[in-house]
Image 1: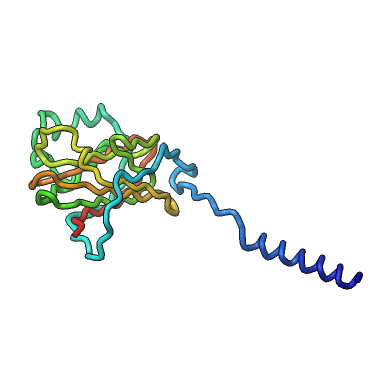
Image 2: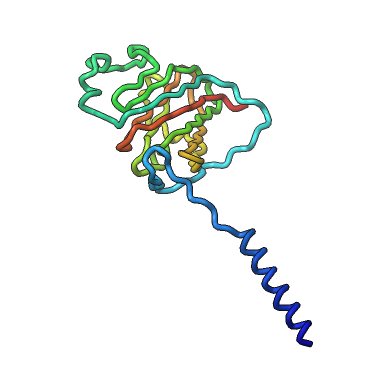
Length: 200
């Protein structure tokens, strides 16, 4: 009887050890630029879109480093000295004083545009604001209609090793040249890399 009891105790200890080794807590990812984890207000999906097996059509891509936003220096930039009604009046891509504009890209009416941004800090948009982060606005060049955020179909923000991946999906309401603008509202430089594609 004593031998059976000893075997039961040993077996129990082995089970505890095996369970503990297989359930280690996940490692928390820290931003490599600042050594801290920027706070995230929330991450949401606006609308789930059907998945497609077709390869997206790449429109534009770029990688760069943004300094923190400096409104006073931006206003003194000769390129913005006069009111700009058309981004073709600015040398694109534009990356100065914490504000970035890509080269304009053409989108047909009804097409679905996907913007994927890898950055040191998360990217927020209107109605999906994120503290201490980058902010993005998207729309047609020369746009004079209502707030274009209504065309945002999906917004996903994911923490990755050393930073964040933000995926935004928009529906183009009209054909023409489009742009987006990124503003660095964080207090540190941020590396960014993005792709803009048409989803089929």
